[in-house]
Amino acid sequence: MLRYERKYLVPYEALDSLRSRIKPFVRPDIYANGNGNGSYLPQYSVRSIYFDTRNLDCHQEKTEGVELRKKFRIRTYNDYSNEAVAVFEIKKKIENRIQKHRSFAEWEDVTLLMETADIEKYIQPDETGQSAEDASRFFFHIKKRNMKPTVLIVYEREAYHGLFDPGVRITFDKNIRSLISPGLKDMFKKRDLKQIYRNHFILEIKYFTPEMPTWAKSLIEEFKLRHQALSKYTLGYDAHTQNSITY
Image (cartoon, rainbow, N blue to C red; front, side):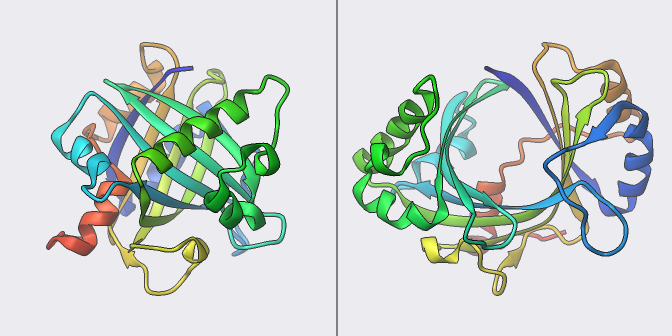
């Protein structure tokens, strides 16, 4: 299903006020855990390795503002464990809407899966067969276009769902950092990552209806936020290859 996605760069000094402002309209993400410092936050770590071609076609499409474009990534969450699950994902951008094709495998099987593309053996099945179909799409592009791991992106995500609008999701993506030319073994790496923003986080508002909920729209107006085309992949790559400003 296609959904709308809006991103805003917000200074950390506005974070507490934003939390207070959205509280009557949201509930915490049920899959998020506390942050472990004594005060509860619906927060978890997101780790993604993005793939691109030798000519960086995905990066170039984003930079040039191509309306129909795709990003390819393997994503997992939090720290390493024997039960870690990897998400193989194609994120498709169609003008101002997003569609995702996702499939799942045990993290321990990822290296063999990438080498063999043996979907039947390693991809977790579902009743509809959609997971296998989405995995086939992923590996078709990876193999045909000879795509390689290009950037590791890591951040902490504070996540909420709409209380009265179940299709609405609001996230605060904080402490965003990256590593260029990672290997699969670097997915859970903690050191030597370059921080992208020191004083800002990315607010994302996602929804399925053509119109953003009124309360969310009021939030944007109240805090004078400006919609921006913020790609963590391109930001993370450019932080290592250009004289990017981290602010």
